Image (cartoon, rainbow, N blue to C red):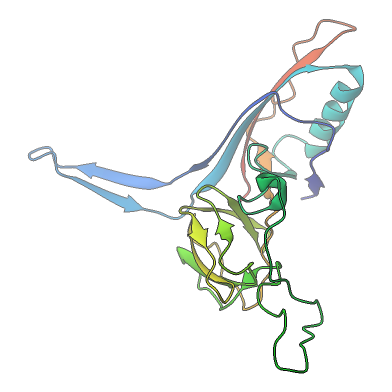
Length: 228
């Protein structure tokens, strides 16, 4: 299996991107009381529409679809609705207030220094497989760490923050996530917060269908699901 990057020149005109949960429901035929069990296998699902694409961009799309070979290979996608977390200056339109730290952890001789909140968040503690929250550090102190719905990339997988979290004065944050952690994560594992991606594959061999006005514009609607 080969994994491809998504071509930057292709941006969907419409899209659906969501976490598809995997639950089992049982309703009593007598009382109608319902029991629900969360099972493993929650996955990211996307439907992307590209309309219209000119000859050059349609060529890029056709080349990618040919390389994916139906469901054989994967491509890394992100949600174009929220490319950056809520606390990112590109999302806020300004630069967050300090303090800022030096990359070599330099401190002043009087014992003070800009050592808290490097702006390079990572895990502050290891996390077990199946965890529904992660302990993180390296945020700007007392600033927004993540907003509800912000995406977090961790060890090549994609997660979503289920609540807004503000960092502590020490630059730490406990972040609730979904889906449950796919695999155990180690201390200091970095977080990907700008365009975090997930490996996805085409749902069928016919995703390359492209209604076209010959010589003019082509349309595509792609259905993809996370490669688990």
